[in-house]
Amino acid sequence: MTPELAYQHLCEHYRETAYLREAQKLWFWDQRTMLAPKGQAHRAKQLAALARFIHARDTDPRVGEWLAQVEGSDLVADPRGPAAVNVREWRRRYEQSVRIPPELAHALAQAAAEGQTAWEQARARNDWPAFRPFLERIVSLKREQAAALGYDTEPYDALLDLYEPGERAAALAPLFEELEAALRGLLPRVNPDFRGGDGPLRGSFPRERQEVLVREAAAAIGYDFAAGRLDTTAHPFSIHLGVGDVRITTRYDENFLGSALFAALHEAGHALYSQGLPPEHWGTPRGEAVSLGIHESQSRLWENLVGRSREFWRFFLPRVRSLFPELGEVKPEEVYATVNQVRPSLIRVEADEMTYNLHIIFRFHLERELINGGVAVGDLPEAWNEAVRRSLDLEVPDDARGVLQDVHWSGGHFGYFPTYTLGNLYAAQLFFRAAAELGDLPAAVAQGDFQPLLAFLRQKIHALGSTLWPRDLVREVTGEDLSPRPFLRYLEEKFTQGV
Ligand code: ZN
Image (cartoon, rainbow, N blue to C red; front, side):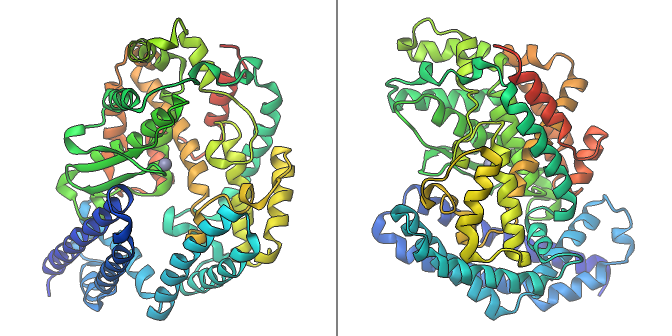
């Protein structure tokens, strides 16, 4: 078989699989937004069946044969050409799939499904002992998975690499250490303007009008409603269902105006990345997002560096006030202070921009130890509470607000947490680079002109798909290695001055 023919087979094979994945995602989207309660049990079976079809295609031995035909040929001579990018990523994914014995894959899927249900109940009842055996089973299977995948220095890396290609725990640890020390030094220096509470956005804000507002905000930054839609879910998400179909969800709090708006800006940020991927490379890695960290950099950039900026509120507040005259004469600076409150808290998803990363850093240390064997599951609540004491100076009153608060571990997602902080760091690096190249970015934002910033991201990040791994991508765009310093500079400039 010629390399050209083998490559053609690979493209056809993976594009067929991509249709199945999209069907899987559409079922998932429907499950979260529309599905009747009595249909849930059957939907779980449908999803599991489809997952088995997809797994069979991912481990098809012909893929290994086709890859071997193409690797080393002229077709992949240019490492940035689409064929080289695709073959590199397909090889990675193929190895990740075939190294996991079918029994282990099945056990992992089952433990994750049972773990999620057990976690939901345990969290609702604040019952750690009920969840503990499920987590023990999951951690033990994840260690088996790491051993099967293989690694150079520590088991945790094998799992981290599934979300963030090329990233290593030993490389993250010193960055996180520098970030943590600087954040703890910065916290006492936060200007009192950012400690006044969120009063101005509290009140009574009917959902229908909030929805109009949220749609306007998402459309303003460039989200294309002709290629997506906005719905309501308990946990907001964005989902890429195919070319021309990238959907987002948000949730409404009728007593607080910030909740739906910032969730929607965050998810629209993810969706802008998906809507900006090159459609001609659909169904192949060249046309797909490269990592969770880069994905999160896009969402955090729009949510925080744009949406929580002084300039954004100069542009957007008049529109908010016309929809909600009850806000009265509130000024952009007041709203700016309100949406940037800094207060160490127990719950990660409610954390402010400054303390959010402290939550992530201690989760990274804990999960790294869980997988590498330094901490036993039984000791986890105590280790968690001690970490919160040390890093946030808070006492954890119960496990529901401690070790049981996040869904990730119950679903077997170890190695996921660091991508949140990577997203924040990459977002600041990319934003500063855009500002340097585009001239007066704050002035454009204050006028509601987001086009130059979006065009920058489209050209430098979205259009590249998985051409470069995250660190290489950001180095190429910014000229600098991954670093916490741009993010720290941003926080320092923003939070140590008054509004
Ligand atoms: Zn996100």
